[in-house]
Amino acid sequence: MSYLQALILGIIEGLTEYLPVSSTGHMIIGSSLMGIAHDKFTSVFTVQVQFGTILSVVVLYWKRFFQNFNIKFYLTLLVAFIPAAIFGKLLGDYIDSLLENVQVVAIMLVLGGIVFLVMDKFIPEKTKEEQDIPYPTALKIGLFQCIAMVPGVSRSAATIIGGLTQGLSRKQAAEFSFFLAVPTMFAASAYKLTKDYVYLNADNLKVLGFGNLVGFVVGIFAVKFFVEIISKYGFKPFGYYRIALGMTILILLKMGYSLSIV
Image (cartoon, rainbow, N blue to C red; front, side, top):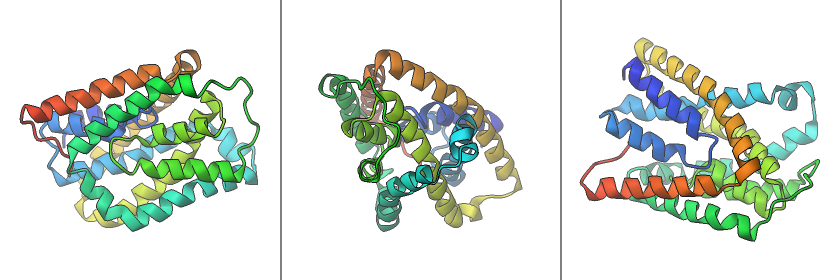
């Protein structure tokens, strides 16, 4: 993988990881169009580049994570994280195998987009934000996050929808999704690293470090942009985008393109 390719994938990761549009779907298209989808390091890169985007949220919400020490905040994240940890461990190999079926990714993108288009009508915006998220609510959001183990669903989309169904405002649902991403993505990346480290050498580590730096910088702007957009327009713009992307993948598959990151 060249530095230019790492730059492009880092930008894709930074832009899409926290937006409810499926970073997996975007990584599949990006790596396939650049002709590196079947390289083993590419599959490692697409997972480990998440460290940069994790750091972007930690930096943006530094006070929430460290300065304003609140044990309930950490326990709430732990409760929400537990379902993904359990199901991820039990179904890890099966989940990885789903990446080979890009049609599943495309279909989930379209279905998720439809959900976003109708969501504002059936789940009205809350004008008063909760101060604290109860543990049962956090657990339910964590169960929603498990749905995102199906590629194309989008982790942020699943957790945001879960938060909205539990009465959170758009902004609070989005921010809790950001917070929950930190332990979830860190655990997933660290676990995968125990298997993938054999594919890393000095040159690959430099490329991966560069990609993480790009993802970190772009991720900071993406998070700010997302909160502003949903506050003004809701989730419909992302619904239309998901449908367009899903249909694009289906069309590419129909034309004979082979899209896969494994």
